[in-house]
Length: 148
Image (cartoon, rainbow, N blue to C red; front, side):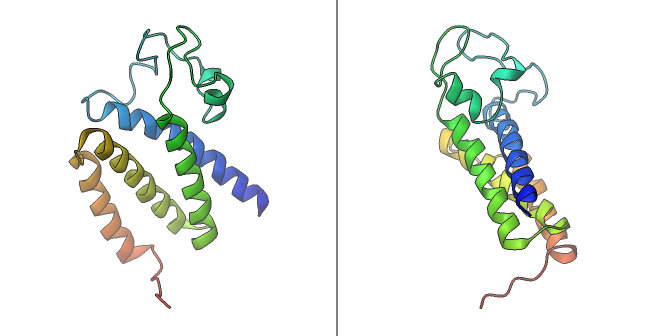
């Protein structure tokens, strides 16, 4: 079971890295795919080894390798929150299809929260599909929760 927690944590961090892209680009109306991740200061493309969730931030001491500009603490924070959330969801609900639904909804909430904190908006692009997924999943794959 330790390996399942480890894989879940790594997956949470990797997805957390993508969530940072969503948090940065969705309010700007930019593509989530192109262009590749780059430094907002010098526009240098971030190499794959400088884009390892949490670790790269620590190794680079929170600075761009190319220009030395500071990188926001939001990036490792989002990755760590998503990692911890996935591990908690695994612990609380166990392994199964319902875990994927909870993880998807949790990640959507992380994105919405950080966009709201930065821009005071809650994008329909995230909330409307999230409501549909939540309702359908609650009626089909999510186990009923008892409030004992």
